[in-house]
Amino acid sequence: MKRVTIKRHLLGTRILHWAIVIEGIILGLTGMQLGGIWGVRIFPGGGVWAIHVVTGLAWIFTALFLVYYLVATGEYKWYDCRRLPYACRYLYQEIKAWFGLGEHVHEPIKYDKEKGEYVEKLVPTEIIVWWLFVVLGVIIMFSGLGMAFPEQFLPLLQLFDSLKYVFGGGAYSIARSMHLITMFIILGIFILHLYAVFLYKMVRGIIFGDREEPTM
Image 1 (tube, one colour):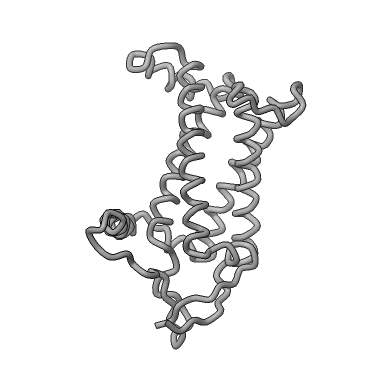
Image 2 (image 1 turned 90 degrees about the vertical axis):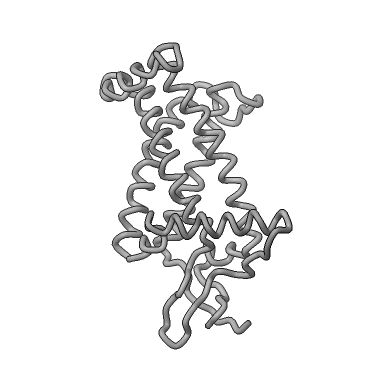
């Protein structure tokens, strides 16, 4: 299959992507240290809470700005929620292939050299990962804001308090549990995403911006 070197990711996309990754790692480590999870102790004990909250606020800003940036540059069209059925069909086909019930899609990404544009820019599972991160990001953001700023975000705590009839406990404990569970789910998806990045050789694109893409 012929390939051509294409500028896959703009500089702004790469900067925002790595900012979110770095902020996410700091949030994960500080969160585990605060929760006494796996014995993680990396940051000075007295400042962990402040680092976690400040980084969390920075992460919210960065994530919102990334969404704005993708919409402004037109890149959001590849992540549009209307493409989810297509992504789910691809995932289903790949799952069948892993169990020997079909063939793997060799490489879904395609670039039309004559038109100078992508026919498909993403591995379809990236669409699913994007929307999982959106949903989980909203949950972890709301639960975190409710715990960090209970007076300013009282309606959020009241929302969590309304769940006590289902989960038991108080508003803060429910928010904390949801925050913790969501963190572990995000960690799992992050590991799978990292595996897929190396599997489909996407590392260079997200670091330097260019990648050799298969052409039509």
